[in-house]
Length: 532
Image (cartoon, rainbow, N blue to C red; front, side, top):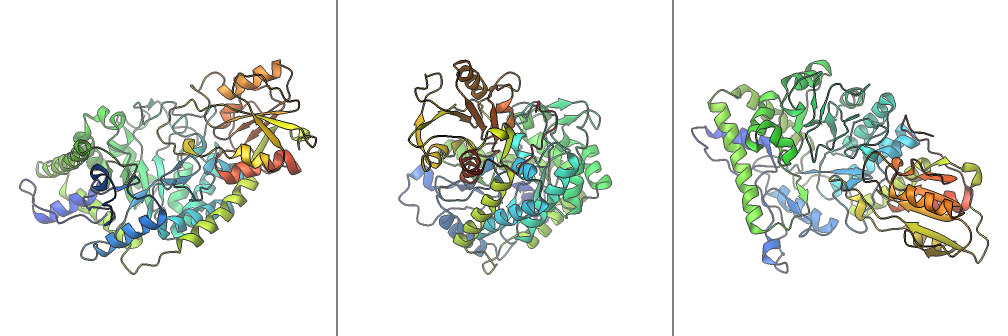
């Protein structure tokens, strides 16, 4: 984002101040509506550099804000705002009516590069239509069995070669739509059991083929690479984002010459191993990171005034720490100039000015829905029991449904707030009876047990699998559907197991089609090591 007018900090000259200001995101520009008088005062004032979804509540408002902000950027750099819009599990633009695409693991199940490229185009057109032209996607980590909380359905699969082909296709599509892509989380979270949002993971080795998806994304000219906060002892004894060796691997061996971005340094588990936020920022830039991220630029917002003041203070402290580090020779002045030059290239290539071309939002969103339907139809996977489909439910009979509540507490997960589409979509074909977990099922016939994230740990059975066991022991014919990680199906005795990979409407509609109409699925489970 274009910085505000830089001033002197310490003894630094204005050119250095301007360069350092470019390296710290979010920036300092105010991003909000001009007509927010109807909002409570504490919510009407946006946090600097952030777009609050408590204030901006629709694509139309987002477009209005970014159009206005791009006009204010004419004297400096084109407007460039980042967002997490991965598809599937993590999407910042999650207002009602916004088409959500199935995520990476669904693309892996479909196994078609053309669909992955179409997904990139669709998301890119949605984002550019509302003025967001830097996407912190795709995830290039490989999947594992069991799935770990930080990755799961965000990965394209466990085969590094296929993951690389799909990642490259997604990058091509996204950037063809005029939105910068970001391959993350280098050098790969595959096999990292702990969630970096909550703890600081340390592993001995990279997972097999971990670099391949990143190499493929780089060969596809990905604009940015996000460096993870995990430590890989075979490479260095420091977190990746503060490791010159890891950055050297990225630049020298993989040949990446774009913008290297840090993981979100405001997360305590990310900055505490490096001695706190300011020390982490200095270590990252010294190691070769070009942009230090302190938070998302599209956020929930609604923080009280004291927290907003703390956000401003923390950013100023990071800028000051970087300035002092240059003055004291901890960071070479040339290193800062090199990083700022890369960031400027990113702004000029993908940023917006007032007359920049933007797709029409309704058309972009409708096109995304068509793409989402195609991906869902090709990705939903019958893991077990294909010969038992479609289900036979005689006319007039009731189809029983048991929704198992979510149990996980993943940070990078907006999809858990998705409406429950399955009952209404099934009700278009049959009468349905929704039954609480643990309750007797009075109706005869099959029972559909389903959930999104019903595991509390990577070990042991999911809540949905336990419910399938209970109903099977009661003599019921059970169909279990996993709307999120496939691990929810592990250990289930249900004769029919279905992986949807996404709780969004297109994927759920594809599940209903398979269960009640043709019984055929086209997806192939893209995770090795599973018991099926």
